[in-house]
Image (cartoon, rainbow, N blue to C red):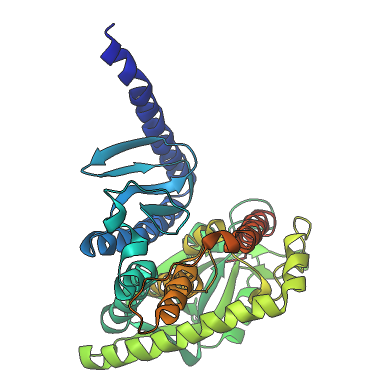
Length: 410
């Protein structure tokens, strides 16, 4: 074997092993749940677009970006295009773009110094630092317009009900009557036999009076009327059981393009405000948040107050993959996720993007009208930055634990 072949064996082996690990993980997740795989891919796409914003604006403004990786940790595989190395790392908890010379602590060759982040004008630094959040906001705005104009905004219809949940397992351990019949969330059961069930109480009465009987259900689904037969279960007290939970009916209301644009920006502003308020509620009630993070598995109180209940990417996948959500509700979740991440990333704390925005703004204020470049000594901020990283790690790992030990019931 030649020396060149031997030198390439390591990287090639890592690339093959890395690619196999990524593919194996995706196949395993898809085997567990295709919906969870789809949601995970959407989140990965959102993370990728965030970093793509940093990368594209850095290139446009003349800065040098040497790395663009999805994930953290050791390289699984990578390739080089021009001056940038692209690749994937195993801990898919985010992504990053390495722009040279972000702070005064970064060592850069003299030839690259003119292309560093720190040597650019304030507008260019501001654009690159905020580009990730801007991409989240753009995705949220596009999502809201699609929701209002094409998919339809979910609006509660007063005095009407529909199926909210379907119990999979009956009292005998087998499939429930509803599950056997193929009833789905969003269905409207309008008749049980010849009995009208316009109100929820009517359905309850009709089902209770038919324990163990085979009944014909007339169901409205996506504008179509279906007739389904199923054998009702029997409760311990002798009443009939179907195995569903009800909720107020939801109708999808579409808007014309002009109205959709107005509603898009109005709703975006409202959601941005809600995100800011949500962050403040968590900070103001940090003690309660810590109590939840240390709650034991299957703690019935862990999810009592959702305002102080952190959610990790694991929880986001669990919620997004729920079969109780309609397409419009999933779009709302996608928009809310992007708005919150965009707002959170703009907090003026390193290592968040907002920390770099704050530093660039402070440096510009210090420069005044002198025209002399002012560079803040980032070394002084390192202890505070480490504290923020430690807090985010604790908060993030705690949220993952919560989502595994006490998953949200969506």
